[in-house]
Image 1 (cartoon, rainbow, N blue to C red):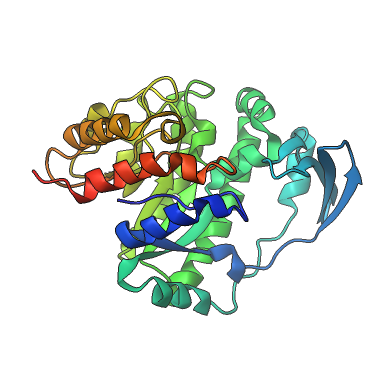
Image 2: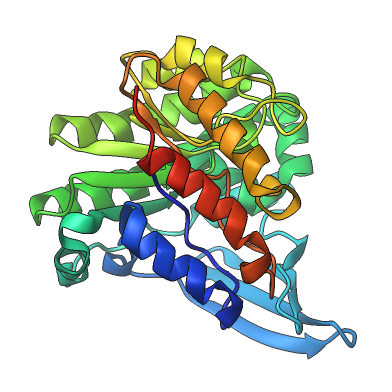
Length: 340
C-alpha cells in the first residue's frame, strides 16, 4: 500500500491524511540524482503577463549560441504551462548538441540520509528524472517531436543518444558511490499510443532505456517507471526491457488496459503499482472505493505477488484534504485488513 506525496503545498487540509498515511502505508524518500551533476548555464527572468500568470523566459547558453523557452507560471498555485520550447526546428538540434556532457561528481550523502530517515518504513528512491525520449519531447514539444519523427528521425535519435549518455555517466558515478538499489525514471508516457506508434515507443523509449536499466540491474538494482496513458500495445515491450515496477496501468477512458490484462502481461516479471483513479478519491464515497480496491486486488493479486495498491496520482486538489479523507481511509483500510 502506497500513496504518492506531491500534495498541494502549504495545505493543512491534508494533515490528517498525511498522518494516516504515515501510520498505515509504506513510504518513499526521494532523492534527485541530478544533484551530483554540473548544470549548463540557464538565465531566467519573469515578466508580467496577466492577473493570474507571469511569463518566465529561460535562456540556455550553448557553445553554438543561445536557445530560449518560455513558460507561464501561475500566481495562484496552479500548474505551469509551456508556451515555447528550446528547440523550435531542426537547426536548433545541432545547437543543443553542441553542449558538452555534464561533469559528474560531488557529494551523494543525501541519499544515505534519505535511507536513514525512512528506515524500515519504506525505501529511499534515487530519481533519474525523464528518460532520453521524454527529455527529447520536452525540448521540442510533443507536436514538433511528432513531426520530426517523420521528417528528421535521425536528429531525434541524436538527442536521445546524448541524453542516454548523460544518464549512463551519472549512473556509473552513483553506483560506484553506493547509491541504490532503488531507482525511478519517467517520461515514457510522452511517446506512447495514440500519438505515437509502438514502433516509436521501441525506437525512442526501449532503445535508449535498455542500457540504463541494464546498468542498474547488473548492479543488483531495481527500476520504477511512471507512465500514464494507453499502454496496451506496448506493455509487452515494458516487460521485455526490464521495468521492475510500473505505475499506473489505466483502463478507459484514461488508458486502454484493465487490471486483469495488465496482470496477464506482467505476471512474474514486472510488478504493478496502482490503480485507483485519483479523481475517484474526490468524487466517490468510501463504499465505492472499498469495492474498487477489492476488485483491483482480485484482478491483479490472484498470485499473491506483484501488486502495490496506489492511486494513479498524488492528492492534488487544494483545500480538499478533509473531503477526500474518507475515500483514502477506505482504500487503506481495505488493503491493511485484506485476507485471502
